[in-house]
Length: 598
Image (cartoon, rainbow, N blue to C red; front, side):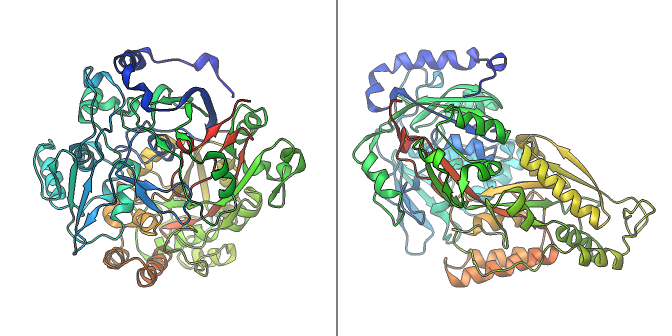
């Protein structure tokens, strides 16, 4: 594993106290069967943004948070399509006849990781912890990008949040109808209306239980001091460089007993893992390596135990869809999966240059979209390791239609005619002006890394063809996400991985009330929002999916996004890693796998 020793600083003020706390709870350490000698080394291609999921939707933050915080329910490791199962509850919830009341029964004897915030006392998980966690997502001071997951859904919660907005103080002690704890281990959630995705929502890592004492103790630094009930806890954190997780001594453990799906990989996974006490891995070391080539070299040098193969390595490592003999001979396993995710370009509807809903502004955005060759991105930039994206919903997600075709395609000739028609005239330098004669300049923000640079070059070629001058700005992913959340970026190359396996999770990114949260372009369409509300009232299935198609068409009509690709991931796994199977929703395999001595 590549290490930048000069930057490898251990935060003593962050981690000394937790180490002392471990000694306090030494008597409970037998519960977690993880072996400290078993270490997994992996890498992220971009930086996290801390581990307070009420305050971020950063993909890499969520990856780590999955093993620190525990939601009420989660997903079966092997089942395909993704299937919800219990996590911290005795059984799946009791649901009232009208579908609005959910009653969860929390398992007894689940404890938070040891932490000084608990003042030497073992801290058991209770229903009140989930009430606090849910309320915290709607607390205005947190400006949670996940607020839209709960907004309007839980009886009394929006009113409490509105009161806090006025007073500047969120009163967590105020009881509300929608969140009740009849006893220590019973959680009752009352919704304003039936919600067909509610259980999918509460399986998201932002709703993993947090202890109020820990949040009060660390305040704005909560993201650097995550304290949960999951199998791992944070030992070391060097922002944008290194994350080290170790087994939580309070974790109760479980026995590996997942049932096979139709996937061919399941037979070997079950053979390797069935009946083992989990987790087996005692330590997880994550390096942030943003450059594809550096990460690929680290894997080839056996410094990384598993990773998704960089697109640029496809020609040297793959023969079609199979590994070349030199990699097969090393015992490396290949798992190729189509992401339940999409890549796209946000167009800021509040921006004075490209925003707005007049015909000339829509024409400009349409021309921009037609200047981008997403098929070339899939086949050339990503070396065939991607598919051209046609709709806002990812493959493998409920509501995806493989027959759907976008009404917008790469067509610079038509884009030029459109711009000519709406008065975007070319100057002597070949670049266009606005209809009022003012300069036309786009600002495209990308993330760090070679693929982002190549995408910027592809954008430049296309935009040059239609005479639009563009300034390209490069910044890191975490900072870009913060700026995009406030709708501050004119154009941003983004990606979204499914938080749950239904199209709502993607289309909510364009829902008007979510502006300033997940709606990074502040798209506001009464037609789209009306269709969204209509879809939410329908059961999952064909009728709801038909509304989703209409919503896709409306976004195309307004050209609020430019669709790019869906990535094909080629996961490469060293032979000493056992039980690995990439999940469409969960990202952290560490609690489900084992590693042999090597």
